[in-house]
Image 1 (tube, one colour):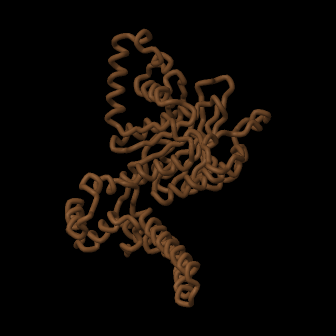
Image 2 (cartoon, one colour):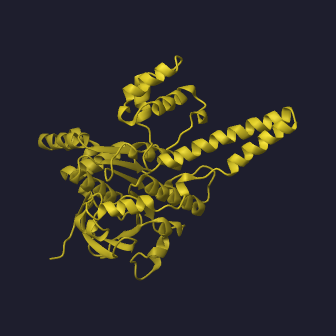
Image 3 (cartoon, helix red, strand yellow):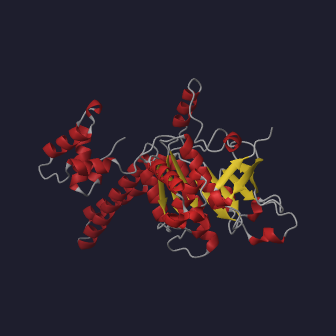
Amino acid sequence: MNINTEWFVDHNYRSVVEAINELDAEHYSLLNIWGKASYLNPQFGLNYDDLSSLNRLFVTGHTLPQIVSELRKQALTRKVKEAASEYQRLPVSDNAEALYESLNNLINTEDTTADGSLDDAMNQLDYRLNHQVEKGIKTFDLLDDIVGGGLYGSMLFTIGARPSVGKTAFSVNLAYEALQQDSKLEVDYFTLEMGKAEMLNRFISRHTGIMSQSLRDPASSLSDIQKSVVRSAIKWLKDHKLNVYDTTPMLDQIVQTIKKNAAKCKTNKYLAIVDYIGLISVQGIDEQRPKLEKVTRELKMLTNDLHIPIVALAQLSRGIESRNNKTPLLSDLRDSGSIEQDSNVVAFLHKPYADNVSAEQLLIQKNREGDLGKIDFYFDGSEMLFKEIKQT
């Protein structure tokens, strides 16, 4: 991909690109790039650690074309401003022509991320004809079957529920099952209602079966054996890649965090969970409907651009409480039809039996890649446990 060094304002970044252009592909390494940049530019101001940090930033094969396109547009925009300033200073024909040319270049900039080509998709399909590929991130067996093998890249999976049904507990179980089945998976959990300590207690409770309430004052509430079990659970979590974010209420913060962390992960090795989308703040938008539309659109674009799954929790409207049949419907999604429109899969968590508080059901009401259906669960809120009930 052609990247012009003149697009960079910072001379250090420009030197890095010059060094990459000078090197043969087989010699691409951080050490070689750093050495070549230092040789080409005696004023090169980045050390090897700086270059290593740059290498970890959120650039992937999916995002690179868009970044290059934006870089070029910014460079052309600067040229327009410079030409306009020069013409304002000295309104002669040469400066007018330069301004016209720079404007024309900016207007005619091609967006390489939207050329309509199917080449990449066709090459991937051709590869899959003779090669088995991972279908997705595994969680619950029955859920994996319904969604076509697991949580797959480009999936926005929305789970709606009324308050106190257990949607946060279900998402904890979803993350736990995914981590249990793949120790190399990285999960980013964005909680907008709880703190890190409370979320940690929920994961510990799920792993150990110890009531989460007992973890609030473990020194006096737990026996020595239980304390040992908790320490083992802490070690288990340390050995897995679970990140909990409780101070990122803004959409931009969530988007940037997902971009940064997903870029470091291989295919099917990253999952983001957002609890819940109705609490996300969007700069410049206060009304709930347009805010939710912006949130779901951004999350959906992230799944496509980064080829990752995102699980988004959503609140259902109060109207469901006034109906005789309280089975959730797509129309119950609160405040916005964009949730249904942008989601690949929409499921509802509800209690199907008024006389059985331990029975929960997950209804798959929309599924672009598979069938609709329902999954019955046993739920123990004190232990944060959701367990599939498999029909025999």
